Length: 251
Image 1 (cartoon, rainbow, N blue to C red):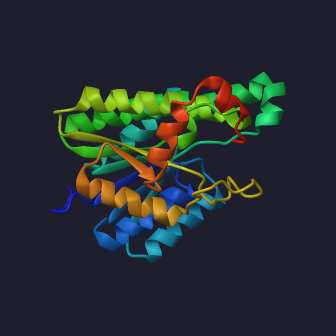
Image 2: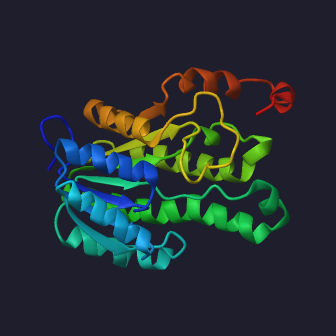
């Protein structure tokens, strides 16, 4: 169960090697979290992440999970919930893709959409059902400001995040009053391995800053969290710009 401050004692991470997810897990372990499940493709990286969190004092287990294999999601994630209640699920997997390449290769573009949206819909519904059955818990979904308005530079990724964001909001509405809390997190440009080599955007942030925002959002039982917070105003302005004006912006 969560503590008096709304922080989880048990955590399931979907996307167990995500730098943002691991920063969040470290922060929560430093507070109250004692049990962590890392779900991801079996790899040395997943094993290293688990060992790192164990060194911080948590009991950590891994589970094989592939966003691109939705037929296996119910089985894989069901095993986690069968072990006991999960206070928080962090949906943190995703892929940026390569916009220029993916425009020329529809199959690659589809894989971005299947990972970021279809895989998240499947895993999100499986976890939401399990949380509802146990009667409590939070589902935290890492979305992106890229989903607020598709940009020429990354509209394949942005459109997949727009779908994810809309799905998570609707799921939160559907679960309202059930004891299950859904929180959508919308970071801007985050300095991670995934964005290495890309031009840094204004208001860039770090995995640690996102983790701090997630913790604060959990304490406040927020439904939407922007990182950094000023992006809420910026994206509101960009979202309402006429399309002809927006098209000419260097974004």
